[in-house]
Length: 131
Image (cartoon, rainbow, N blue to C red):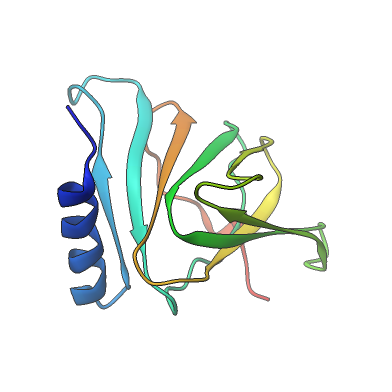
C-alpha cells in the first residue's frame, strides 16, 4: 500500500464532512492484528479530551499539517506543550504509557500516523479528564 496525496486528500475530505472533524484509516493487516496502526485526519476544531493510555505508549508521526500535543499532571494542569509539524523537527513524538495528554489541530488537512500496542479498547471514564 502506498500512502499518497490521493489517500490523504480523501481522508481530509472525510474529516471535514464528519461532525467530529476527524477520520481515521485502519492500517492493520487483519482483524486479528494485535496492534493499533492508523492514519488520523484532523481538522481545526476537532475535540480530543485529555486522556491517557494505561497499557500502552503511543507513537505519533506527522504526515501532513501540524498539531500541538499538550501534556498534563494528575491534577489536570498543563505541564508541557509540543508543536509537531510535518517536514520539520520535531515531527514525531513517543508518548509514555499513562501520560495525560490531548492535542489541538493547527491547520486544515492535517494527517498523522498513530501506533499503539494491543487491540483497541475504549477508554474508561477514569482515563479521561474534563479540563
